Every structure is written in C-alpha cells, then in structure tokens.
Image (cartoon, rainbow, N blue to C red; front, side, top):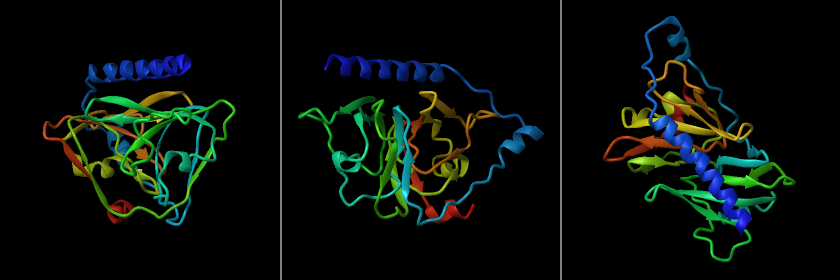
Length: 228
C-alpha cells in the first residue's frame, strides 16, 4: 500500500506541476503568416470503420479512450488481457483522481464509462497490446463543467483537433494528451501559432480545460468529422 500511495502521489504531483505551468502561461496568439496558415490546414486520415479498437500501451502511465463499446464494461473484464496496477478516473467535480486497483476490495469505481478518458498504469512486465471488442460509437454529446474534464474520443479514425472542438469554440482553453513514451503531457491551445499537435487518434485519452463559467457541451458528429 505504501508503494501504491507513493506512485499515485508522484503522478499527481507531476500532473499538478504541469497544469500549473500551463495555467500560468499565456501562449501568443497565432499571427497571420504563411507558416501559421500551413499549420492550420492539416488534413486527417480516416481509418476503415470496421477496424478493431486496438491500442499499443507503454510500460508506465497511459491515457486512453474506449474506441468501441464493450458488452461488459467492467474494468476487470476490459483489462483482463494486460498486466496493470492502477486505473485513474478524473473526478471533474473535485478536480482530482479516483483510484482503482485490482488488488483492492474497496474501489470507488469498477466500470469504464464510455464518455470518459482514463489513465492506466501498465506493469513493467505487462502485455502492452489492448484490444477492446464491441460496437462502434455513433453521434453523442458530452457535457463538461468549468475546469478540467476528461471526455473520451470514441472513434476509430483520426480527426483534426480544430474541427473536433468546433462545438466548444471560445469555451475551452487547452486540450492535453499524454505522451506515454516520454511520460508527460502534450498541449494544444487555439491561441498557439505552433501547437504541439493538431490531431487526435483512435484510443487516445484527453484533458480539456473549459474556461466558460456555464460549462460546455462537446458534440461528437461522426459524419461531419469523417467528411473532412
């Protein structure tokens, strides 16, 4: 239990330090230059719709979304083929993590919510390929409150961030994805002329910082995203 507490505390400290750094940093607005225009015209590749929801996980922390809806959404069932130690679920109300451990009998949550993203800690000797069988997701809406939220990206194709977030334009400040290879966050801001990324991929999890006092509704329109 002591090792578990240290591991979770260290992760949360890293998370809060990075959040603080970004919240106190104001990115420069994109200037209208040839280079900025080139960055803004990123296209996306649509993977076959029948592609399985497969994810390659790294040893250490990974942030994922379920890109298929399993018939049994229990954490034990979905993660039965990999060696993992913890699953973290973000509590938007308290702005903190809830922790699931397969070794605990008193977990605060035991199932995956298809509308959320999750952190999974893969053990050093663990299998790193996760396959989630299930039906593909269709259009849906996810309500978010003021502050940090972890909505899922549910589709099996790559989407352009700008188009994906069009329904919450002017209501969010940042979108963050987790770089599992470097074990740190990458960030997208609509104010940056050269954001760290402009695409979101199948199976990726995300943090979105909503800066609108009334919250925001992220609308997932599958047809619109696939049309380019």
